Length: 390
Image 1 (cartoon, one colour):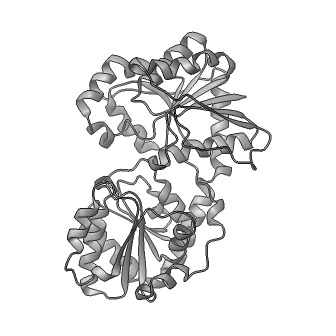
Image 2 (cartoon, rainbow, N blue to C red):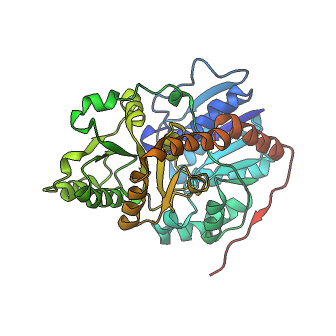
Image 3 (cartoon, one colour):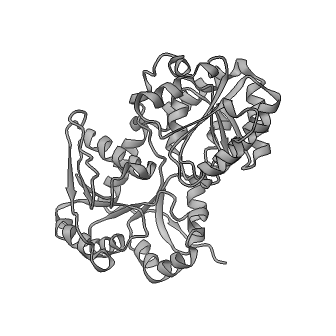
């Protein structure tokens, strides 16, 4: 089976919206599919030399001006639609995606759309007037002609019904690449670089320093907590996307400021050593569809604190941590509960790891994705999401 993924850019700064499709590409190729990536900029990404298995991965790049409504990008690949079995498009708000869907409908080529949460309430509220116009003029018809839309969970399906379009769908979670977390650095590696934190209980958060990630709420909760406790520290790791000045202002003059670290983007061994040494992983987003950072930290065996907007109710269901409201007081209360039960941190972390192992690994998710590819190619039908009125 030959599958082509349309992913306009492979910019690693886009985080999960790039990582997730590239995982799909690698894992389905390893399972025997021939997979192509159609992109305007690969950012130097190359298929792995090993682990592709019986399939293949080909990157096809089209650099240069897009032209009106991205016609140039579409035309570069339009002639190749006849050579594939299925087109897998990532994202929605690009004219090229509509061009591809309409062309595939004429040719009888099935199309799968992975939205990555783009139809949920929070993303739809950003530039909402423009999106509603585009939905009415283009995207509504585009979604009607899409073979199936990939929803990551029931909450994405529920909120996407508010976007104003009918579409056929299935639900399948993201899978996490667990290989790099199977052998974390020895505990104490990060602490050795930060001797002031060596004896502290470390709370870690990894993500963009952006309002949507709720980093400001986590810091506020920690600073209140730290007034009563001197045995805790906080590491907020991630690139600045407009929030660092606000965080710095909160820290300025605070007696616990010396127990907070903002190391910026962390990768490689530093990221792994942070995960090894953290005692609690906190993810306090105001919106998530399905966070890869949460899944990775859970698989690393961390006791978890997540907000109820992270759409990961499984954390609380299996007692791998706590789920709290998007509120600094609720976050503080959740942290206090976990810190007051130190003997449970390791056990909760192990339950988090088992949760990911059972539901969210490549071995679990990939066969299901391939099954949907086969069902769409065979002309199988999918249930409808009906647009919610009003």
